[in-house]
Length: 207
Ligand code: SF4
Image (cartoon, rainbow, N blue to C red; front, side, top):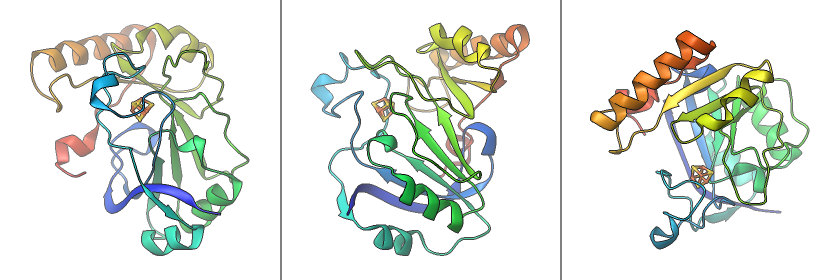
């Protein structure tokens, strides 16, 4: 049994969601069901703003993944993609949960999450993937503004924390487009009770 792994890196800082600002290792699984990753199909995909390279990857066993992550008991681990729940199974989640203080699974919400330990959390950034509704029940939502604003009502109705995160049209947290998106996020915090998520790793200059 192997997983297709795009990259393993760290230590770094979790920039988003409930564990923002905390040290972590990062495990990125390859592949996504929202976009095939080719530049020529980006505009027509569910995520034209995607800034992640998730193509390719290397087949790795669970033991090889854990050896690459190393022993970091004081840290968390971010399990991301691509779409990590295309591959993640209960064995991977249990092993990560026993090796790290916390684990954030960052999903687009179109796949249910396998059974997981209580320190493994699901963060859903809901994507409008054609024919694949959002079905995961996350621990919190991360709604990109303006791309996913139509999902705000449903996210708030769940009773779970709803982070709003400004899209960076110019690749980083700067420029007029970013300022406009940030202003809208602040408005949603004031008027709807959302929480601001600012991708702290981009401010800190870490991957
Ligand atoms: S779901 Fe995430 S990784 Fe996949 S295309 Fe969308 S933004 Fe990129």
